[in-house]
View 1 (cartoon, rainbow, N blue to C red):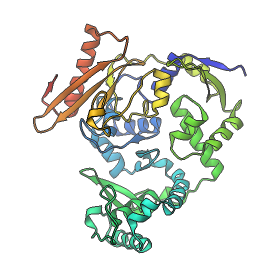
View 2 (cartoon, rainbow, N blue to C red; view 1 turned 180 degrees about the horizontal axis):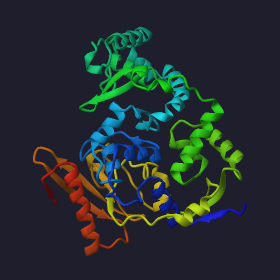
View 3 (tube, rainbow, N blue to C red; view 1 turned 120 degrees about the horizontal axis):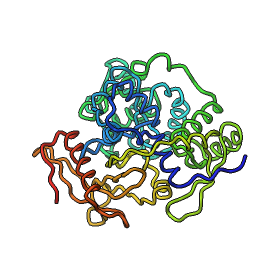
View 4 (tube, rainbow, N blue to C red; view 1 turned 135 degrees about the vertical axis):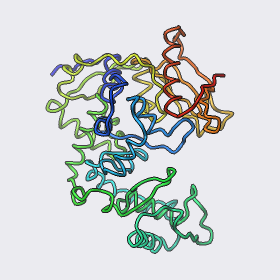
Length: 396
């Protein structure tokens, strides 16, 4: 099959489409629709920073204006259709894929056993600490880290606020024995996984071949087109050699090789896409005209190198950069207009005064301000004001 060349505009529109950013933003949203959206995206990254609103809520609100945080809470806590664990970072994931986390749990268990930071936080009696916490949850039910008495061996400090008991809870969660049943003021509440995850998913264990096939195919469906390294990185747990072998084996069957044009001046990238990609490209809708402020952890820009190549947008999240070294600001959100990133905006919600503060806005080189563009940005600011329950917007 002749290698298809995908233009840069097509590649952008394809990614926005598969990630749910092309549709009209004000369609009615039910919990069922929200669940379908998260399945379509793959997962939603979780982050604790609430300078504007927590990242997972911003990610979903950017796709539908009717989104409300309680919808996500209900899917997680009441219906059990979603669960929290790790992809490349902490994330909310459809529970239907829980069996594919079983291989990950085994790998994490092995890695932690060999990690001196983890084992150091647990102390010399690590096994006893883990068993004590395990037994506590088994006997007393859902627990938060602050509910556990904390003792530390001499010389063992607190790691990101984690003493031995908190470390044991995280260990048991990341290795699958515990699950998060809810959050209280964003603090995790842990329980035995069998009391959180529906029973239908408890005993399923995919083979290595099934896991690789699932991980690669689901990643490709959510990236549109991708290199083996991008497939391996999507779920954060796939070996690059396995991704390459899968691509080689499936090429000409369920997938095909393509050339994807770049926007940053680099050479077209040899990638892979579904076998009927040419049909999909012809049917791609143009992205909505709504200007959107994306979460810093939105899946469209999570892979910074890929975002630079596809959109010629060089984004860096600077919350953890010392203030004097920041180029823009603490919590800067990319501004998306159709299939272009036109700038970035530094926002903060002051909850005491109920104001949404615009600390700064910067346009990309070559992007001109216009009445229409400024009106669209003002509309998105108003949407954010309503979403974070602020009364007013303050500009610099």
